[in-house]
Image (cartoon, rainbow, N blue to C red; front, side):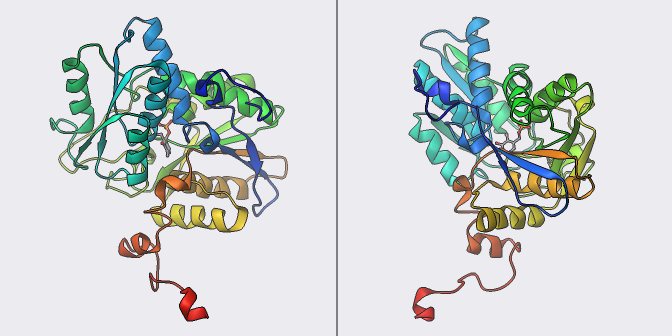
Length: 338
Ligand code: PMP
């Protein structure tokens, strides 16, 4: 993407996101990849486009068809904008834990949104993944994107995110830090960077502290879209096929509180308004950078914008209610200061 270029449609503005250097402690260079500058507002635009185009090629999605997906929001937004541009209908299943801003964005792109209760076990008929699968089956021309098991998900990052980072750092990148949700970003971009650097790039996963990717106990946490938690009734879980653990060198667990304070600070110190999982990734990147030398070039993926969470992570009342903030929720008032 080049801001001076002219595009045929919104789809040309997917991906192609810039790197910005962050001020951090220590000698290493840290760049943030601002995925929220993609046209739909997240890294998931890339997979929305790739999954739809692959399904068209495979004959699974035909004119007049319906795109169906269960999502924590961003994949739905990516799919809904691609569907809108290409003339498909979209049906998106979310849980009531997904932020209001994301649900409203989905509706703005014309998606029909079904909201289900959060925290249900995978085998429950109302779990978004089970519900979406039935919805796709019962809708004529319905196609389930299935980001967790769709090879086009990591592929999108192998073909775009990884090469962009390599080109933008002129091959100097030494560490990639990314959250793991479906695993698509880290698996695709990580695999590309390892191949092109002949194993010279270390790939580090950032994971909410209780998420099972990093060996946590699977208790629920509050960062949307990253990690994986287990319902108490679920004995075990399987890795999504979009996640390739062989690409990941290590996983840094980050507590919700630390992630949220890190991302709130980023907005105040550096003018970058990113989402909660960006805080998870950034806190891990700080740790990686602190242990690396002056030659290290750390690239951290910021998957989406803080604007999607103004009613949550950037809302002091919400933060206080959940025990993430100490003190008085009301904060200083203009009237008091006058
Ligand atoms: N953070 C946010 C905000 C996301 O939307 C996602 C994707 N669901 C992730 C992190 C994780 O990315 P991935 O699914 O590629 O592992």
